[in-house]
Length: 62
Image (cartoon, rainbow, N blue to C red; front, side):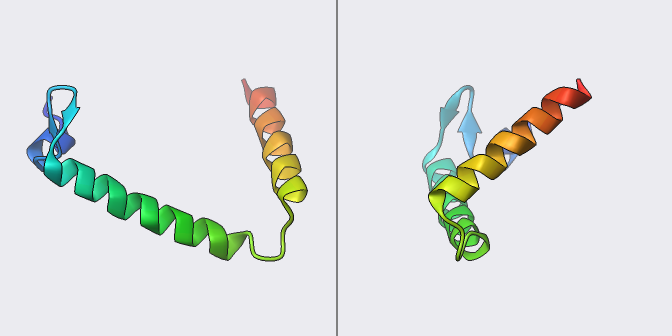
């Protein structure tokens, strides 16, 4: 089985390549932008409470 990250040139073994570092930085930028968008108007306390409840709900499924 091939590793798609190796095929894209983002990984060699366990190390990120320069292309991998750039891809990771671009993904980080996108994730941060989406997180800002979806959490607009939500306090840190509300966000943390939501994450806590969702974490407990997923544990209930195990």
